[in-house]
Image (tube, rainbow, N blue to C red):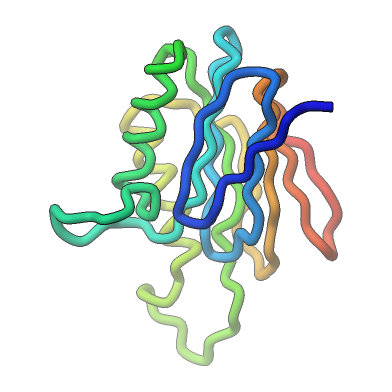
Amino acid sequence: MKEIRRVGMADLAVACSPLVLVTIGLGSCVGVALYDDKAKVGGLAHIMLPKSNGPFVSNLAKFADTALPLLVTRMLECGALHRRLTAKLAGGAQMFKLDRPTDTMRIGDRNTAAITEWLKKKRIPLLAQDTGGNWGRTVELDTETGEFLVRTIARGERRL
């Protein structure tokens, strides 16, 4: 049985094979998994918001614009190469129905957009995603295979 490391909300972790990284409770938050299949190094971030405000950020893992660079840096420190990184993501739901949804209240969509734009700028291929809807998700990244398992209560499991 593989060792499991939990990644909390507004948190991130990097691990080498054969560890499994897990994060639970993704609603509007997005779980972003990066993986280098040659080095077998994986990283998982549980991102809450799309953008930090200002230069003084107490938790870099909370925001897409600060968490993703930190996640890549830590993966490179563990032997991954930027050119071999690939990404998968899940979450970004709209958990509550709003009578008048404003852009500010559509946090899941904004999180997903911020992450996909950043990945595109950094030329990290997005191989798969399970985002949107109005349901919660739990995700697992297997650092041995790069498999990204998305679990939901009512919709079952998907292997990406």
